[in-house]
Amino acid sequence: MIPDIIDTHSHFYPRWYLDMLGRRSEIPRVVNDGAGERFVIFPGERGRPIDQAYWDLDSKLAFMDRLGISRTVL
Image 1 (cartoon, rainbow, N blue to C red):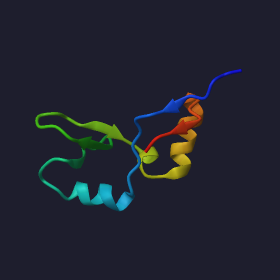
Image 2 (cartoon, rainbow, N blue to C red):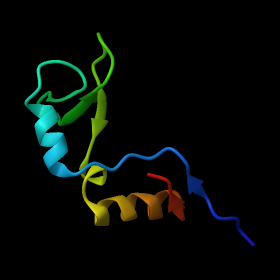
Image 3 (cartoon, rainbow, N blue to C red):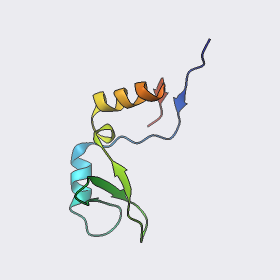
């Protein structure tokens, strides 16, 4: 029997919240570098790429399926 894989550090944000972060000039903020959105948390960093799995439930579930994750902690 394969044990459940549980992601204990996951992120899921309402799209309106990410849009609000995109209007900020200070961190935390979301920037679009032309190649996609990035979540900037720390000073001097480029940011972490974010995609639809950060705000769309079906995309999040598809991401989890691809990686064999059965549950996630938000």
